[in-house]
Amino acid sequence: MSEAATRPSADAGALIASLDPLLRGWLPRQRWFAGKGRPVTGFELVAATELLPPGAELGLLHLLVRVRQPLLAGPDAAAEHELPADCYQLLIGVRAELPPPLAPALIGHVTQGALAGRTVYEALLDPRLTGLILERLRMPGRLGVLRFARAEHSDIPPALTPRTCGVEQSNSSLVYGDAFILKLFRRVVPGVNPDLELPLALARQDCARVPAPAAWLTADGVDEPLVLGVLQPYVRGACDGWELALQALAKGEDFTAEARALGRATAEVHAALAAALPTVSLGRAQVELLARGMTERLEAAARAVPALRPYEPALRTAYQALADLGTHSGTVWTAQRVHGDLHLGQCLRAPTGAWSLIDFEGEPARPLAERRMPQPAARDVAGMLRSFDYAARSYRPWSPGWADVCRAAYCTGYTDVSGRDPRTEPVLLRAHETDKAVYEAVYEARHRPDWLPVPLAALDQLAADAAGPRRGAATPGRPDDVR
Ligand SMILES: Nc1ncnc2c1ncn2[C@@H]1O[C@H](COP(=O)(O)OP(=O)(O)O)[C@@H](O)[C@H]1O
Ligand SMILES: O=P(O)(O)O[C@H]1O[C@H](CO)[C@@H](O[C@H]2O[C@H](CO)[C@@H](O)[C@H](O)[C@H]2O)[C@H](O)[C@H]1O
Image 1: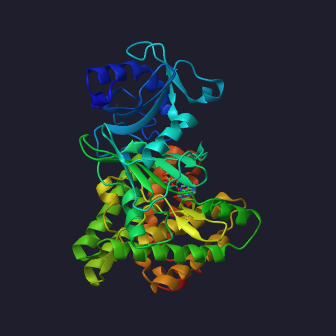
Image 2: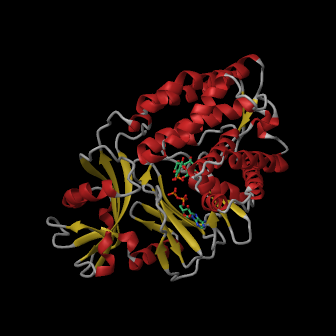
């Protein structure tokens, strides 16, 4: 293919036909493949771009591929996507033969078409090819449907040594010289990706809590624009909040100072987001809509995860209480852009002790339009409160007291900066915490069934609280009712 043949063409059609049998076997095994549990019935090429034309020795193809899969019942049914077929970003290396260190990258040997006789493989495991991707990002411009952009004043040195980021994740990341990290989105959805939009908005506010995008990769000229990757400064020597929380639990150490610092960091990011992007007042109709959305997610989740069904009637009352408050008391909440999937794993602590927040994509299974809607800041607060509970419950013996004090310290830190204590809105907070735990139950049923008891235990407690406050617990509305 030449550069002119970067849109689907007869050549490109032949290319995908030749890769089809190999991708069918390889794709479902990838951690980031969102369609697990449903058979792959075919591929449709959206765009193919040669980042390095496959010459005699080496080639690099950038593919956007729609994966056809039937919708089945089960946990997936709660996670409808807005596209008829999910679109994935693939970076395919092409060689005559794979050198032994690249053996784990193998996708397969092509037997037909222009690449017949060649070996194709996961390009992100090949430093020669990932180095080339960074060089492209350093030079703004277009290649086929791909557009490489760079932030003004960003300084990206050449020839930084690339390595893959070892963690299991929903996307794929590459670290360059411990100076930058490039996140390449795997399942890509049309429209503005909040993982680029929000960090750019925060950078405009000089918010130091979020690494500012240095360069990014998008596609246009396809059906709708797509955000494909974001390069950000790498927080060297950082440890994420989840690891730190587990270490503290293992050593029997207090984590409340960190929890309070995290509360402050969250409030700073919320303030910067509220300053950068529109906020709205949630009147009666909007609160009803919010509560209805939560109820519908609960219903869908209960259809998909049978273990949720016994709690459904009691959990509904948490949402009803939210709707009632909005309707009858005239309470008006403010909604703003939020992180959307905040948990301890999304918080990085630098060796200096400073916390950064990352991964503003929101809950990946939710439609993009929903993820980009202004929401009460309580949504992120609830995500973090759930995360302290997760950490405490994942450690044996379970130490509920550890979670209680962290949750309270987090809220105190949030109040330090915002002047608003999230605990003074217990109905709003409880509804969001319930909604988050319901999401987690679906997430765990789908990805990590062994972890399902963690959100279920929380839902059990939330359902009991909805029926009446637990004995010895503070009255709802009192600041210490957060646990
Ligand atoms: N700016 C950064 N500095 C250091 N490490 C980072 C940075 N951004 C991400 N990471 C690391 O990469 C991992 C995955 O990043 P994340 O944005 O959460 O991807 P995903 O959406 O695929 O989960 C994080 O858990 C963290 O370990
Ligand atoms: O991969 P993402 O960061 O986009 O988030 C997804 O995976 C998370 C698990 O890796 C999941 O988080 C849940 O488990 C965490 C512990 O592993 C816990 O700290 C979180 O509180 C809990 O929600 C997240 O929900 C999911 O979207």
